[in-house]
Every structure is written in structure tokens, then in C-alpha cells.
Length: 305
Image (cartoon, rainbow, N blue to C red):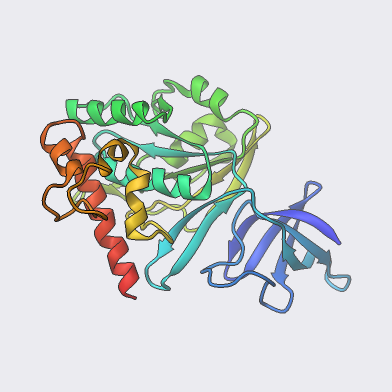
């Protein structure tokens, strides 16, 4: 029996790397023991026990999945189940851009929650810094820094900031996530030109990217670091979180929740809500509060199912 790492999975066929060799593997018996209720039993980064197929060189059967140290997941709306994008990470880097496509801080809010749920350290990468970073974006980025989230500024096109980013991923198993068009593939190509990853063009009508990556895949070992490129995500639904617990992922709300006039308080519609009062007083960013309300509503929809 061998131990390997999943570097790609498509239609229940997994590429497993072991001792610098790659094997095409399927799950023995089609169902992994002790893995229930998930959209996908295995994800990129998972360590697995597998055995070689003596009759078919280069192929094998996966026997079990080793315990994960962490994971990054989303809610799969179609299958109504959690979908793990990647596992056993040292960090997640959420890539964003100022204008093309436009900065969407509420998407980053969801990435922050998903990373916290999976116990994965995260940072933000602002690509395309040659574009205009307006005041609202600066305010939001400053707030993320106040929450303790590192931010790296770069331009894959111009080569600016790439040395700092390269140091940030050195020796770390890193997943790059973000919406289509923000430049994940361009950044990876800049870090290692030999990758030659496909770079998509922006849809000019909607000012958003087109998918160039369909599945999460470990694309390289850059400077002793495993790099996972993930599909562009237009919407990230938070997975397996009760709506009543959401407030604990908005740490700036926490000092006020005990002061609400009604307990428990959802901080959405109740009168005498100290959180809403803090928003009105400018102590909590209004956009962060609106982001909270949006995620709260989506979680309530999950619970109806």
C-alpha cells in the first residue's frame, strides 16, 4: 500500500502523485469508507492510501483518505452538499482586481468565512494595481488588514510585486482562488513562465472573466511550494454554517451583540439591535453589514431545504 497526494480529480478519476510518479486512480468499491454527505469524497491536496494495479501499469485503486488537517470548501447549490475545493493547505490566496473585473469585497468576505471554517490561513492578492484603486476599495482593504488579513499588491502584466508574492508562497502549499478574470493564471504564469496556463479574456459586455480552469488542479512545485489553481468562482456560497452562528465570523460585530435589546438577535430586523445601531453610527462598515445580511439570507435558504 502506498501514500500519495491527489493533484487532480475529474469524474471520479483521480491523478495521484507518489514519489514524483503519477498514477491514474479510481476509488476501490466506488465509495470511500467514513466519507458521507459530501459532494466530492476527494479533493486536490488530499492524502490517500492506494494500491497499484498490477495488470495495468500507471493505474491504481484508492483505498482510503487520510485525515485532513484543513480544507477549503463551498456549498454546491445544485447538489445541496458541501464541495471541498482543496485540502491540507498552508494558505489560501484570494485574488481580486480593482476594475476589470470590478472589486467585489463581499465575495472576499465569503472567502474569509470559508477559510475560517476550514481552518486555513488566508491572504488577499490585489492584482492589476495599474488600475484605479478608489477610496471605497481602500477603505475595505484597510478593514481587511485590521482583521489581520495580509494583503499583497501586484501586477502580473507589469511584473510589479511578484518578488514579494513569490516569497509569500515559498515552501507553502497554496491555493489561488478568485473570480474569473482577476488574473490567477496570469500570476502563476508570471511566477513560473514555463507553466503556460491559458489566460482568458474579459467579457466586455459584462466586465467579467470567462472560465479558463474547469477543475482545481495542482499545477506546479514553485520554489518548493505546491500551487493549486482553482476554477474562477462567480458566486461562493458558504457551506455548512447555521445562520445564527454567522455573526461570529464578523468579529467587529461581537462587542455589540450582548447589548441587543432582544436575545437571541439575528441583527437583521429586530428593534433595539446594537449591531444595527453601530452601523448607523459608523462604528461598523455599512457594506460589511450588508454583506452579513446577504450571507444570512442565503444560509436561511439552505436551512429550508
